[in-house]
Length: 85
Image (cartoon, rainbow, N blue to C red; front, top):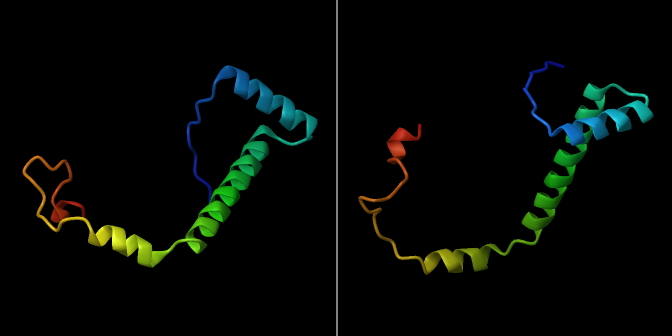
């Protein structure tokens, strides 16, 4: 497994609580963070899959069909499509 680093900035109270839980679990703080992040990522992915399964594409298309088809104005904050590459 390859790894990367990220300078995580936590409030002091949260870091202290994480240290306590990691120690009580007899695991390193790093391993505790990895497990917590993996658990949250799994929860979010499951939630998104469940929401996607309930999606009604016909209703979504009907909503989009009501939006006028006009070119962006000069004050449009998005860059031109060719600059997004």
